[in-house]
View 1 (cartoon, one colour):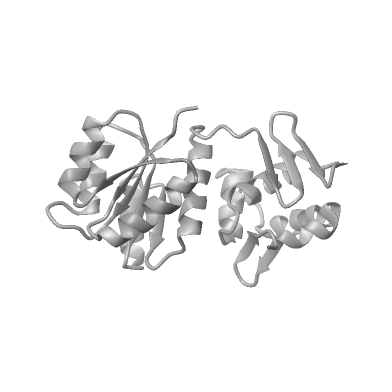
View 2 (spheres, rainbow, N blue to C red; view 1 turned 30 degrees about the vertical axis):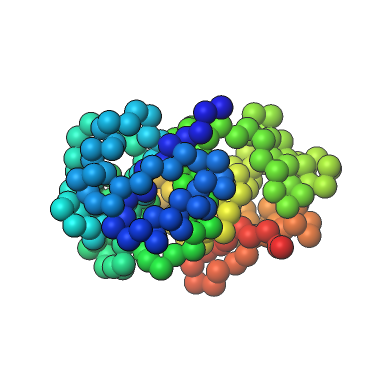
Length: 225
């Protein structure tokens, strides 16, 4: 399979190099732009860019304007990077069609995990079998094995585990889990998450400890080193 192209747009060369190094290790083909105008030029000149990582504050053209330009012609996934953590900025990003919003400073590993998760959702990264921490999850067969033993999961438990694994290392609120696993048209109680997580952990045995509780927020799937 050809390498997927990711366009990294940031006026700080050190930041671009950091992100590029981590993405390159995961076999992505990384293109760089140091300002908004250059980013737009590269995007329209280069075919088949799978995802854009876009800084907000840049000379010549800021990230918001780049997003507006790209969104007129493409639904390519966009991750916005910003030093701000203002809710208004975050809302503006989602209104403009931003897929993910990450505040600086951030962990490059988490950024790569978000890139992979978004591309999986966009079906750009086809990964039918995921192997992590002794858990083998086969999406096509809807089957989970832990240490080579089949685990009998309900449909929703399988979907929940899949969501956790494909968002490894990311703190997930109950609302976010509901929206993605039970879909946006579900209006039930967020406590249904806790019930399903409890059952899932029980069926996973010791591997259930990979699902960490974040008190007052939700959960995070993290494999022990």
